[in-house]
Image (tube, rainbow, N blue to C red; front, side):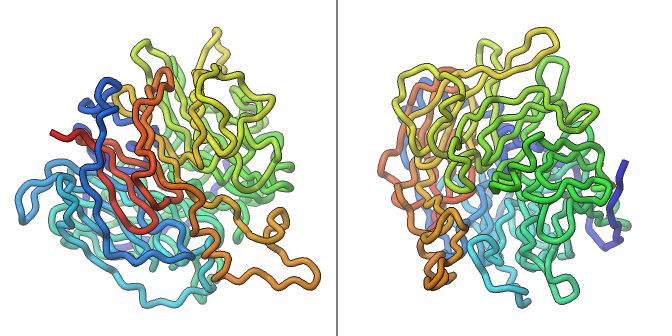
Length: 535
């Protein structure tokens, strides 16, 4: 087993294990496995979700920037928090200005907010790929009453839920100005993953791709460990869900890079990292990895999701390639580390485009009333011509769709079968599921990553001027459609609700939170929205 980790001792205050109470949403993707499925939500249902109304919208003080595509992190929801104004249900999000907000879930009013100025200077100017801003969704330890989060200076912090009081002295977790992803809390260890080489300092200008773990079980002797997935920028993990909990530790998947495990380089791979980031426990690299590198179809655009099925614990993932993989979490790729349990046909991105097609996010799941295990794939672009034949009924989907797949078993063999496909969405974000309803958000975002010489990644031709950061940022931050919330029957795909043109802005790399009988969304212009049933 290859090990490549460092361990440092730091001071830290105590915390307790994370606990999920009814109808809360305490971490990205609802749980440590990133299922997207709130099993405790019972208020909204297929029978009444058609009566959804916009209950409130709140404009936060964070000022959007064209260069930062994600202004606010995905919302988190904590129930029954004691505040100076009494017991409240609170929504939490952090902005690109390093401001953490606690918002009243019933009124949309800000209960408290705290800003943590970053006085450091980034190694490189901001771009839409590396905006030098915070983007990692925090994680809530409800039992301890603490929310943990990182800020753009790379430090891990912890505040009380009710008043924003410091419960954890700030300490480095990742490099300053890192592009790190959603935090996870597993057995008193906080995990995050960082990639793209965005962060750095004078001593190490380019942050290597890594899984970072802060063990907070002993406040007198806490420890920070890192497992590096590569050297420098290539092979970094950057799925927005961050590290995902599974039987062998935490699971991540990486971007383009070399395949050289002996040298500690895991390009285009799904990796099981041992608890506390103490080395690699297992890995899977698809047979098409050289093609993925050549065409920039890397696994990094997606992220793993882990779920039980019969007597196994499975991992499902996809990427820009448009292929869905099912893996056994206890034996990711077989003896050759390259054999999945099941590999779907290409479900999208026949053009093998690095932008605007395929999967840019994680797959969600639920179990329907009749016991079927369904997976929900947020597919960008049209369906693949050689993919599954979905039941007709929702029309063509040239811009994107939610594809529902059924997990089926024949003896020891596991496969996927088509269940339903949604109507056209421009483009779907990560899916939330609760009480028999699927919630999808049409982001409305511009998916073209350049406005000139798109297939050459914006490189100027002879005699052309290069794209400026300002012009490209304005192009990327100008939406092509309105943000829209759509609710569908989880089993059949029947559309039950649509917000239509009610929302005028857009959002990037996010996910709705469904809890407390409401649906919470954020947008690029720093709004928070709450949908629910009016009394």
